[in-house]
Length: 526
Image 1 (cartoon, rainbow, N blue to C red):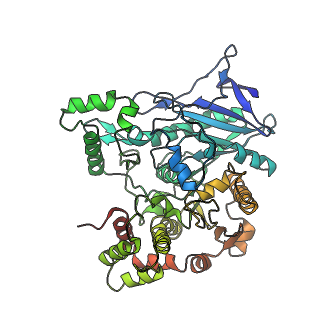
Image 2: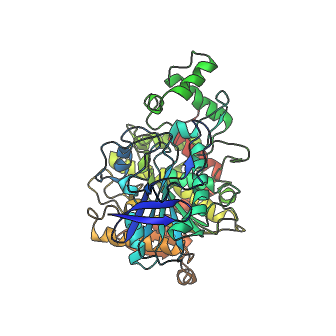
Image 3: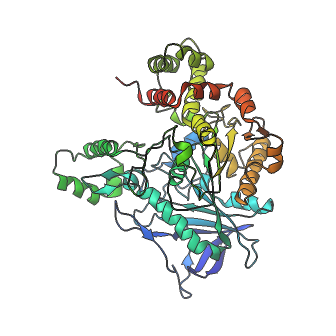
């Protein structure tokens, strides 16, 4: 069933009506000005009284590999019903979905929650069923804390991030799309019943990396942020030499390396999107670029606390899943003997008096069964790439202007998949957004509702951790296991849930930890 809204700045919109919400799909928020160019803000009306804008259909995705949704489903361990093929468009992919509670009264202004999807920086979209915000928004209504849900598409992969001197491109187009999205939101969200001065952004995986990168900007974009399973250290901004190396790899993959510079420009500007994407690795390692006036520095463990806590962000909540490195299984954790490889990296990277401490802490042995070794290696890589950035963000800047809270997810995945029994990457979002209600247990559903309620309170400015919890010494929200939520002290959490490993790794020094993580992920430097 459709529902009409006479929006004061966008014109008449025909949305899709549900029991507790109305969803407006495929709204253009930015003008595409050409490949490898910055988009511009879509300011004016998109309809007229004579021709209402049809917002009942999903907008197209930004160009990406076909069936990229399968990568996402593989991480969660289960598929949802979905389209066989999603429409893609380079020129019309910059669209937004807005989900509004039906219960809003005239003049009411409620908090706005913006979802930034993940997908390795190369896939994803606001029309994917696992990222639909309708159930999340309707849950906010039933809990008496209604919010408006917003999800932007943004440019991905090479078409959204490539920087090159030869092309005269700076990259960062996908990030700048999100910047435009937040600007568009502040101009138009009041017409949907949202409060433009109360915006909370949350993202997971690559979406969290993107959000962590946006926190480095000087211009205010939102009021608070929930950064889930990702940080700017996980995909650091590339320096010029790194981008040029990536550009050379792309030119070679497109069979353009032997042509002139003009030939390469014609190819990269003139080929259709699928003509480029189909010839590249499915998960090509793109990312943000150092760009003077936009992104100034590479963020490390040593600088993340300073760089990602701008004064304009009132509150920041960050966290991880205990087995987040499950998303690295096919790319990193795929050695014939993972434990042997990890031990070799540890002994080659760390001092002789330190390496045995790490090997013992993670119970690494080449004689252990393959599955046991896999989990041990996964936990070490998770701690280095996900847990440590959280600890450095929390502890390294006591004078920070932004209030910072943290959570950790320990609920094991219950699906009959390779992740069963592990608190794997993406399973927290599976519970939080509540699009899997028909396949989740009662325990998982209850935890998902509790997680959502904390996010709603956070969006209302009531703190990620309540004053009562803080007064009792609580500093760390722990979701799971057994469907339970606990709030523990810092040292208590690390000792009881992480076996004291956070304290151990911090004692090694940030450079040793980054060197070890890079060796594990990319190989030992020759």
